[in-house]
Length: 104
Image 1 (cartoon, rainbow, N blue to C red):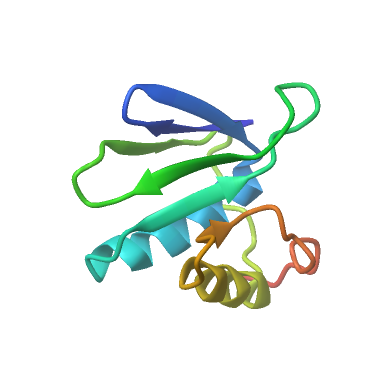
Image 2: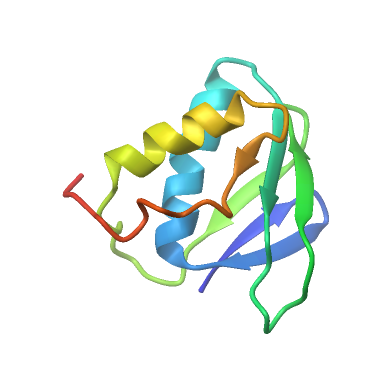
C-alpha cells in the first residue's frame, strides 16, 4: 500500500490507484487548477466518504511501497480527469476502468 501525504494527514491507497492519482493531480496542478479529491475508504480503515481540497499551496507527497511504476489505464485517467472538472471533483470511487490496464 502506498500513502498520500496531504498537509499533515496520511491516506493509504493501493500503489496502482496512487499512480493514477499522481498523474491526474499533477496535470491539474500544472494548470494551477484546484478542486476536491473524493473517495470511499476501505472497510478496514473507515466508512463514509472522504474529501480533501487539492491546491497548489497544500503540501502533497506520494509515497509508493513498490519501486516499479504500475501499468496505466488511459481510459481510467481520462475518466478521472473528466470527474475532476465536475462539482464533486476528482472521484476515486468510480473505478469501472481500473482493472483494464494498458502499458504506459
